[in-house]
Image 1 (tube, rainbow, N blue to C red):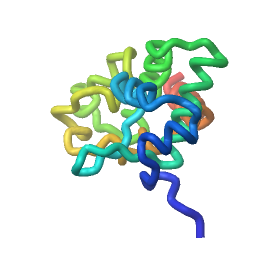
Image 2: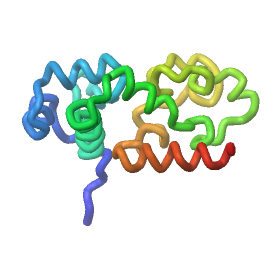
Image 3: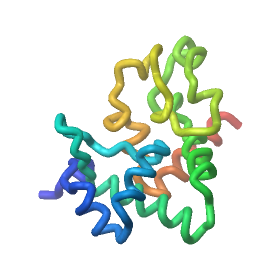
Image 4: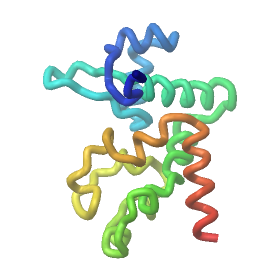
Amino acid sequence: MTQDQNIPIYTISEAAKLLGISVHTLRMYEKESLILPFKKESSQRRYSPNDLTRITCIRDAINKDKISIAGIKRILALNPCWDIIKCTPEDRAQCLSLNDHTKPCWAHNHSTGICETKNCRECKVYVESASCNAIKQSIISGTLKSI
């Protein structure tokens, strides 16, 4: 039986140790809306294997590709979330993510529309964009549909 890769099992210190980074770095990524760790009622952060994959992608973009955090946010903002979750034309008209290319959809305060009641951490857009390859494929798929 394979483990669900989205189950948050690592504490912040365990995740930091596994990734070879500091707890401060993980908190900074959260503050910058690059990651959405699971938070227990006690506010203790937990990370899933997919979260570790996402953080590895972020680290590689920063360290190997020399992409800034602002650049990573812009890349994540290109993910066609409105297409992935099948927004209606009405939802698209109200969608902050559709018109803002500076941060990922999960960084917006969704006070209206289809995302108003969604938990972004559990949203298909966030869950399925854990790896660099998945993000690339999502952007390619969304781009090709509109060309």
